[in-house]
Length: 317
Image (cartoon, rainbow, N blue to C red; front, top):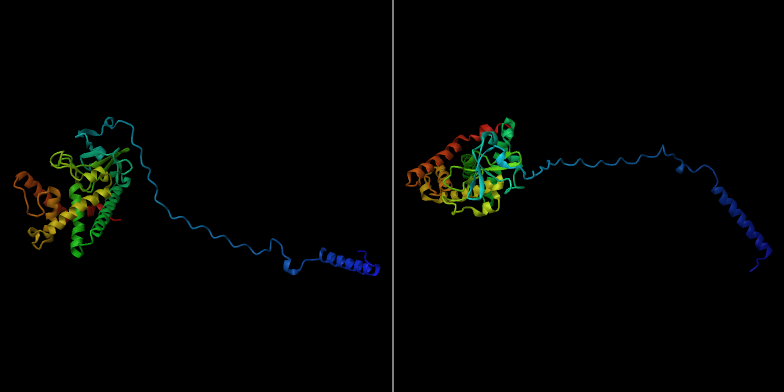
């Protein structure tokens, strides 16, 4: 549609005025005070909160590879194959550090299962601070293992009886092994053996778990050995302590030990643990040699219980 002239003129004027107004508002006049700021005067952004420092983690101990060298060429002692089950070594003192004479080579059978922080070389064992640290660690491990064992069995032992029992566990471990479990030589590992035991396949580790009776055909504690629990110092303690606990509960209720002396229950339990003969503190074999063995064993643990020889070796923290 064509607009009439007067209306068209009015419209043109309106458009012109609108254009002028828009031009002024977009011209280079100073901006308002609200927007008059420079980068230098900007309010600083909040300082980012630093990430918390990660909690230090203990170093990961790398499991050493099984050595490819021939151990028999290392001149570390003499070896005998025991019923084609394991190698029993008579280690030189320079290898064992004087911690025992008979050891089982467990390098292959226990690969990846060794508690490396407890497996010291002879050179490490000669360092006084290292030995003290070792004994302190074993002391704590025995306490923790014994406490867990009692809890796992319903905390039947309480008060003074519990205290006596936990101390007896330390004396038992000392009697059995002087708190020894491993020897490390380079990247070979050995577990402590009884050597002179009546049990022909030896008693193993820190709590001296029997692998057999008087005959190699009389296998004992098969699950413990088949599962490789002897590889760990903690698992060996727990297994041995469980056996002693069961022996103690038997001795605890036996009429022969109701003398009023709590040590008779401790000794009766150890008589069963070490000889298998009786849970009575005075239950002795008629065989003179075996009877002497029982008497010496019970006298030994009582002496260690009284003297607590580990205390002078633990030293201050």
